[in-house]
Image (cartoon, rainbow, N blue to C red; front, side, top):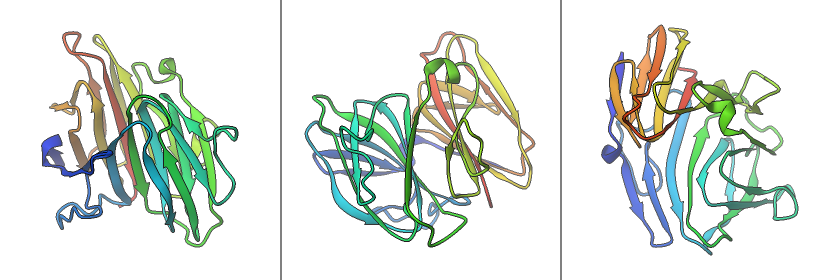
Length: 240
């Protein structure tokens, strides 16, 4: 089964300092048809104005991944992670993972001069009441060029961020006539989110913000046309 959801079908929130699109029900956006997909619970596309951000707030029992597109974001938390001097500033190419575990407080602030554009992703964990933890890695453009690069995983691969969830996240950059394919386990779920540009995915044309939900599929085919601008995509391998 394959289900296409267009960008403009997402929930929308405008707070002045924060503009968001919600792929799944979140805060004041409630859509019973879009509560989650497998153990993927949240994809929020956020634009945070310069000099603003999220103050200290709490999370529990969630794997939270931040994928930065432009600008910068400073993370601080109750574990002592982050801060400008503590490696907590994330910039384009950086991916951040925070396991909320049995409870953590954190803040996210844009101290830069330009808006910050990011995706915040929540995945339901496979274990509850673990100790909270924090990690971030940089993935250079060449690592994602013309391929699906593993950036976060619950399987313990050393090259990726470690999630405490039965899920994996891949990122790809495509230009000219680049393409990539992947064999899918039919008992798993696959969610594809186009971050920017335009891609042909399993025969469907997706633009920025569009998503494709796949179940009981044996393959994923991603291709880019040279006439289109450079594209970026995230692919999620998920538990049902």
